[in-house]
Length: 117
Image (cartoon, rainbow, N blue to C red; front, side, top):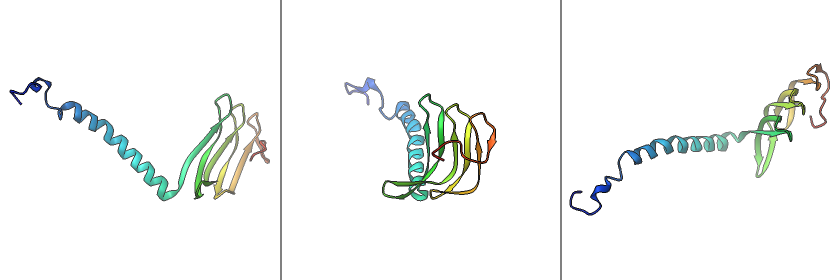
């Protein structure tokens, strides 16, 4: 408003505020959507890496209670050299369907090559 000492500062509801809203709105919407999805499905992705940074395993876990989770859905396990070791599906912590296994050289095998499979 003209006549006030700080009138040269401009309107605080101008382009800067609009930019802030345009940046924050998608982030807030994404966080709310992920929270809603996790709460309603109780399933979320998880992965772990070997010490050198290569993926050890990746899959999904399902919340079955307070701080209780079980493997659920598609899982992939890798050897320390980065090659795929196993691939298959879990249903509430139990292996289901066909599982495929590979040795450290990448050749198909009939038995798991890693002890934690």
